[in-house]
Amino acid sequence: ITMLEDRAAVLGTKVDFGAITVKKSEEDALLDGTLELQITGSGTWGSVTEFIVSLDSLPYASTIEEMRVYNPTAMSETAEPGAEWKFNIDLMQYLGKKI
Image 1 (cartoon, rainbow, N blue to C red):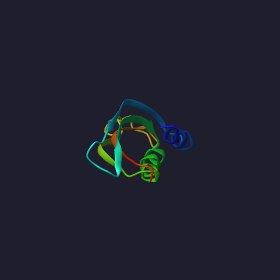
Image 2: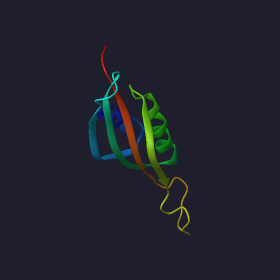
Image 3: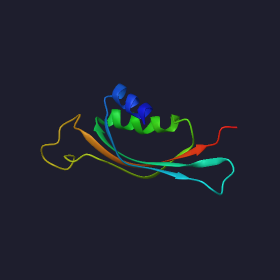
Image 4: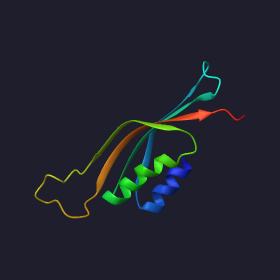
């Protein structure tokens, strides 16, 4: 989470973390479990897309379960270039065992 917060700060993206759930795996010998995160945030189109791409650099395999990226003013007459974009991401990260 700290790594994601630091990356967002460098990119100029605001992030907040909602529900954080850790589930232990009893069945998989190579997997300790999963970490499930709800991430919301906002920024310019460039900073938001760079933040999403940076999720690929997490230390363990991750899956974006659900994602929504939107511009609340895009369809209004007051839309301006560089307007703020918002996002909601449900991310699941697999936690591997140390061998």
